[in-house]
Length: 334
Image 1 (cartoon, rainbow, N blue to C red):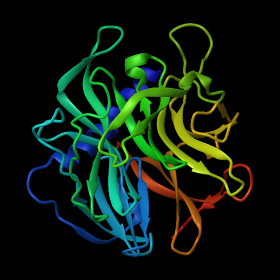
Image 2: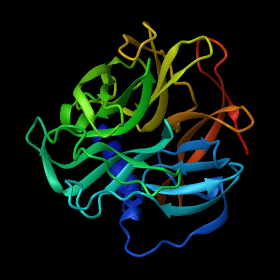
Image 3: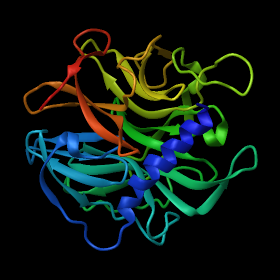
């Protein structure tokens, strides 16, 4: 299966239907006591909030789930309230939402897509405008609303999958510049204003998709080569102080989780890729969090075919961070 087919399947079969859920008019019915493996969700992100002693899970689609124990969840709740007069339009699609607590405020990092606006790719194609943006709330379950800056990233770029990293008191947005625009996806950093209301300066490339020794795609001719896709960065630190980053690409038609490490111990890198993926095939877009019991878990998604439909579901793995590297353990059953 070609990379183009991979990406088309990702958009048409998964991301678009799930993102469109956030566009429905009228209130959504909230379900109670839903098992984790019964939730359809791509790009899961879990915030363990000590204040409320609840877990909050979001992802593509921008909807929110709540749980006291990771096993059963209530939701989905609509929590994002972007400005309808902004470039996003009245009903943007929302991809890969994340929740971050910082200095008493809760921040909603997400990719917003307006299909009515177009961006010209390097080869002249017209692509839907999508970009990383940050909303804010005083509560983990929102509502999340805009801050002062109307844009965080240049209008002529396609950026996605923003996450947060704070280094020596300076906050950064880490994100992907999409391969559809540059034909070799990147992971980049850009500084945030102290109140997260906008970005400062220009983005800096940390690494490119082609740096991966494990990702693969079949070109139109010639031997297999590294995949073009960068997806789902998440920065972490081991207990020994080593700085790492989860990120995802493809091995032919299989979504796959990888990891890289900074040789300087700083976000600026240089970043060196691990030679092999860190999870079994068909897992990706991972992030790490600590349970209220002190266990480190990795949340990510896998896919399954259900009545001929390609769906994604959240999964959990145990993780060991006591050494110099992230070591995934067994699947975790709450």
